[in-house]
Image 1: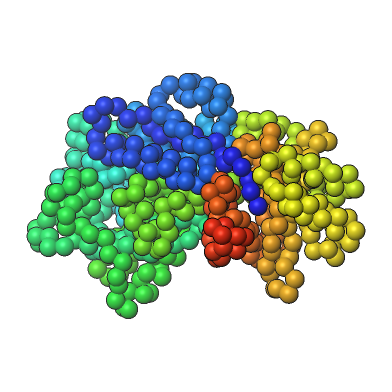
Image 2 (image 1 turned 90 degrees about the vertical axis):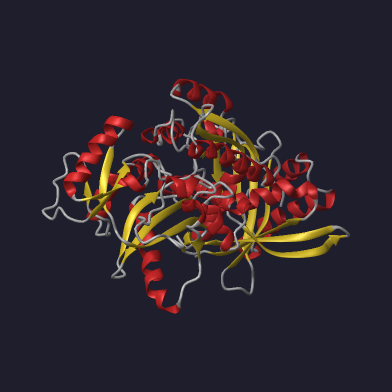
Amino acid sequence: MPVAGGLSVLVMHGAIAPGAPLDEQDTLVQVQAVMGALTALGHRPRALPLTLDLGAARSELEASRPDLVFNLVEAIDGRGSLIHFGVGLAETLGIPVTGAATGGLLNTSHKTLAKRLLTLAGLSTPAWLAPGVPAPADGQGLWIVKSVWEHGSIGIDEDSIIEGVQAALGQLSRRAEQRGGEWYAERFVTGREFNVALLAGAGGPQVLPIGEIRFEDWPAEKPRIVGYAAKWHEGSFEYDHTPRSFNFPPGDEALLGELRRIALECWRLFDLRGHARVDFRVDEAGRPWVLEVNANPCISPEAGFAAIAEHAGIGYAEVVGRIVADAFAGAARAREGAAPAGAPSAALPRGPWTRQLPDVGFRETLVPSDRESVRSLVAATGFFSEEEVAIAVELVDERLRRGPASGYEFVLAEEGGELVGYSCYGRVSGTAASWDLYWIAVGPDRQGHGLGALLLSRTEALVGAAGGGTLYAETSSRAQYRPTRGFYESMGFVQAAYLPGFYGPGDGKVVYSKVVSPR
């Protein structure tokens, strides 16, 4: 059923200076692509460039009070060490934000800290050298010098490969002196390189098809690394000879299963959300080594993550929608932790994202006066025909008359004793675990403020508490219902069926589904 208006979304990214390097300029491509997908999903996006003036950013967030911040910050003022500042600001103001929380971003972006945590968790990562870290007794072998904070292969070239510990330590000092920042050296693993992308879904993180970076026709003396040129210098040898492959022989199945397992362990270890990528090297003995965990990988349409998702049959808008849905699912999980599903009048957390909803509470028990309240609210939306309004009231009557035997359950949102939104759902008779979302409606004065997302999250929590299953929602294919379809997709629903001409000529039925886990 329709929910008009969509969400107000600020797409937050690091401000890009004129003449910035290619890796930074790519951020603007990301921003435009994400804003396009959000618009297609029925939301109202606007870009927010983030600078070192965090006070100005805070004022903007407080003034606009978005329903959601979509985080694309990879650096501020060109410094990856500030990657978590934007998320921390949104969290301070109580605004839902996509992707990993501050802790997850900090723990993964500081690469030597991430390596320490991986080691403590028993996950293999190559040995490393850094100031204050004891050098290994075996000083032989190859090392690769990397930036502690910067991603995108910044600073990685053929000169990054060093023979021996002492030479590697000397290169660390030179890099710090010449380029600034913090540097470390990692034991170079000769072998194969893999990217494992993960995307949030209704049933938890989904491991997307694994991609291997192939080093095609490389001279024997050339170090096989995915350096800066391979990622950003179109037309270079490195760029043209490092294709991504998804084709593997049967003998790789055990290895691919191990890569999936470790990637999921990394997701849990760092409390990742939305989407992530884990980069591996597999040595000549077939042992996987975690190189990096990227909690906020680039999702430009031409970047690796989008290519992997496309190979999995997941369109760009769905990727963005699932990242958005996971942000609200995280907020819902936090609320459920404070108030168990089914608790009457569960108050929403205060914060700018609730905007004009400071005193909204939930209840699940109908009273006779709800009959007229539902009629008035549904009619006031201007979205439903008289026949549809009558059906909405009929479901209320059935529940009041027959109670749970009616098969209709309700979630009602109230503010100051006034009904401001509601959902109606129920288990589909004759099925093991299928549920229908019959109605979800929000009063016209409350549309566009995230109440629809809160109602649906609450409904899903109640379905989960009842054992979980698949929740179905249906709507029209007409252009008028585009925001409705976008709403469902942004909440993690996927299209399950399309029935052309179901409601009338040119008016088909679109059926969406979402798996809800038991709680």
